[in-house]
Each structure stands twice: as structure tokens, then as C-alpha cells.
Length: 425
Image (cartoon, rainbow, N blue to C red):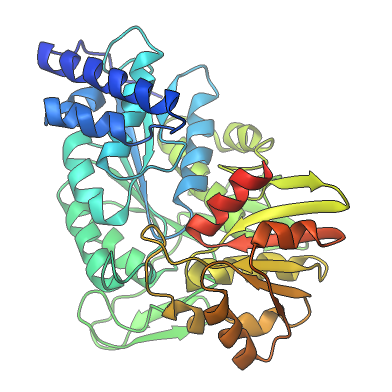
């Protein structure tokens, strides 16, 4: 991996760093993790501080609706295994202030140079990719998937995907690694000069009925998709995930197959790992080496973590929209019919609108003993009743898991998941 050389920060940026450290330190002493406030204050002092902190770094930006945090963590692990310090927003604060804070934290652990460690792997909210890419001049942009999520905050998903495509087109020297099986993601990826395509049959195509190029109808035939109006079609994968007989392998552009042996469960994490291997290879890490660095990764920000409690265990899963739920349902189908507690909130970070519940195939949970919890438990209960799925209501999701003997899965949307993580770990 060829890395860029570090650069000293100018005076104004150093003042911004000092101000950010003072405010972040006060926030942490007050019991807050400070994942945003430092970057916000630094930007108030120097509006170009993000660009200055990213200068001379090899930057990888990861965006998409689902899987950003896990894939970012995987890529950081792949690139950091050779002794390189990797700056990353591991707490998931993925808007400009949070990304700035992550770079400030990396600066604090270095010798005070903007590019120390040389690598930055940052997840980016889809709506902010253009702004962050303009500031950081990324070497690699990763496009995971696009689906409906927080419509009251983010907007219609096709509009979001088009904005991402505009951001990609604005950075022709960046290598774009995109998901070929997601119609909207591929549409954005086609904006790149020479995209690398990752492929594996998609578990969700509920947002893939209209062509991102001409708005014509998209037809699906097996793993293939194509627009019947303009001919835009699924590209062949350069990096392909193959799952056969209980074994997962990744085939690279040269045909070499690399076996995945992950602790993180499910098809979705094997797909995330495929992206990590593709990015690693682009930056000089052999696929077999990259796969080895992912072997011991067992949880990311509490996702997939199993907590031991009196009487059993609780596994923590995140699902915040229909596409994410499709992945979780696949994961639940792989194992025994253990009890499931589903917790749904509708705070600002979740999106106030929970109508997406009606697009989740909750019928697949019929074999599981089920509990509906969270602030929108009543809405969830109505949806489950229409699905014909027996369940009971609980005021407290964590208490419901503690009242269950044996192993249980707790599936929460964004704030419900984080509430449960704090309570159980």
C-alpha cells in the first residue's frame, strides 16, 4: 500500500484542534462520549478543518443505507493489520462533525501531524457523501446499497442515490467499489470512470423497480436485472461472494478464490467482508491476508454481540428498515427457533415515520416465540397481528430478555438497539 506523507497543520487549524479538545474533554467528563461536539466546535473555528485534517491521508469513504459501520470496521481492520494506524469513526458518527471528531481523535494519538497514520476509513451518511468527499479527496469510495430509510429526514431513496452518483462523478480519480446486485447502487456506481463491482444475489429488491438512468421499468430474472427501456443492466462482478455447501469464498478479478471464516454471522456479513477484501486488494493487501485479519472480529459497536445474563444469553441485532430486516430474517432463519424480542422506537435518529413496518416480512417470525417492545410497540403489535404472528407486549425490551430463560435475540431499530446495548453491556 502506497501511503501519503503527513503534513503540518496551519495555525488556524491548530487553534481549532485546541478548542475541540477542550470542549470534547468537558463533554466526556460530563458523561457524554463526545463523538460530534469536538468536530462541530473545530469547524466553527476553521471551516476548512476537515480538509486540513484529511490532507495527505489515504481516505476510504463507505456509504449506503445498511452495513456502513460493520463494513467500515472490517476495512479498517484489513488496512490496519500491517502496523499502519487507521483513523476511523468507530462510534458510527457519520456526518461531517462526527468524521472531523474522528480525525481529531486520531491526531491526538499521533505526533500532531495531519496525516499521521496515513489511512482514514470513514463511514459517511449518504446525504453527506458529496460534502465529505469534496473535503477529503478519497482514494476509494464504497457504495454498499440504497433502500428506503428515514423518509421524513433523508427523502426518497432514488433522489439520494442520484446525489451519490453526482458525488462519485465529481471525483473521477477515486476508485469506486459498488454493489452490482442493487439497482440504485449500480446506477450510482456507473457514474465512476472504472468501477469495481461486488456481486452476490441480493436479498432485497423492494426499491429496485425503476431504472436509475431513464425511470423505465426494471425486470429481474434470477440474479440478473435489466431496464427494458434503455438497456441498463447488472454488470458482472469483479469480486463475487459464492456460498455453497456451508462454505463461503470470495472470487477476485483474477479468479483466485479466498475462503471466508468469520465469527460475524449471516450472509450480510460475508458480503460486507467481500467489500473489505476488494478495498484491501485495491490498496495492496492480499485477499488471503485480509481474510485472516477479519477472522477474529466478533462484534462491531455491539452489533451481533452475545451477552451472558442469569438464565441464558441475549444476542443484539440491529434492523432499522425493510432491507435491514430482510438481512436479519435471513440470519434468524439460519438458526433454531429461539425467542425474539423486537424493539421499535421513533425518535429523531430513527425517523418519526414507522410505516416501513408494513414492508417487513414479519410472517417469517411465526416459528419464534415473539415479544413486541419499544416506544412503538403498539404499531408493531398491529403489524404482527396482520401477519398472523402470535406475540406478547412488553414495556421494556431489556426486561423482556431478562425474563426469558435460555438464548434470545433482541432486534432493535437504531435508538432501541443502542438503549439495549447500554443496558446489557
